[in-house]
Length: 380
Figure 1 (cartoon, rainbow, N blue to C red):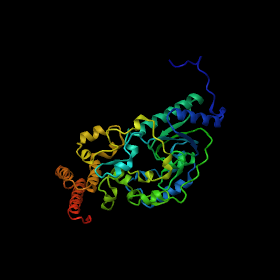
Figure 2: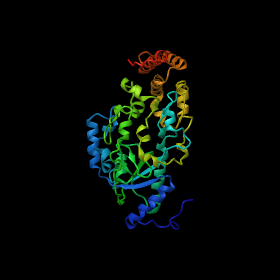
Figure 3: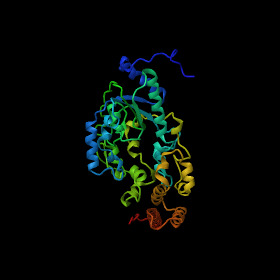
Figure 4: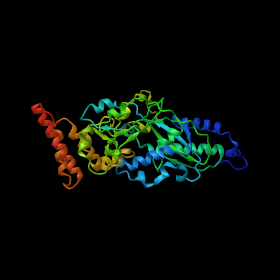
């Protein structure tokens, strides 16, 4: 039974509390809820706004029209949620324990590589629930206050806000890097109408390192902190709806959902820690799956085995598209050719999936010819 007015302890008004002490308690509550860091950001993001406008003007967003749809709301939190005075930014590690090592999967072209963030359950609901619990705990301490939770659910520049909140700096690959935890983590925000003291933004510690730029398979990092999404394998395998440009298919290798190369090479990730969240553990063997086994999934199997997963959002056809490219890049194998023939027979010749399967068949024939002659692969 909830406490009555006669026995409920009075809640002090927010302005009567020591803001610094309150932020300290927020960090304690955040840790208890599974967040590794909590920081406070203000609402002014002029540098990030200019960067976003330049990125959009260059067309780097590709098909992600939603990046431009909300104008400056994305870079002006107080306009997105009127009354916002400060933002609580939180991060949560997601690197799954007991998963196959990325290097092992990437080095075996018969296996499929799934970005580590997508191996477990979809993070959106978990982070949103925990942030709401943090808001509820804060309300129990100070009384009702205006707030709104965001986890990739609205036009929010989460990396820029996390930078302002002192949770790390924007690396040359455009992801946030924490000096003591690398970059394998999710971000979430709690917009509030509380005048909380902002944290000091972190200093940039990338120095002259260009490892992430140099290793990108498709040369998608076009400047420090600037990624041309149209060239990025994560965009190509997840966001792009339709055919993948041929120039990027061979560089994709066996990456069937996302790409982690820029994080795998980052020296700061030697400090990364594995997650303690059960929901982020790898499911259904997707940390080291057989390409042929995945390609054999029916749509019903795809929907069942990706339930509650970020993988579900790309849909069955894009899933088959990505797998077709990976199978085309695999060494010649009669079983692969047979699977491609069967899939093409089930696909309408007018659909872009048909073209991807056909492309993969050509690549397999080139692999077979190379094996027979010892020559190099010719890709039309």
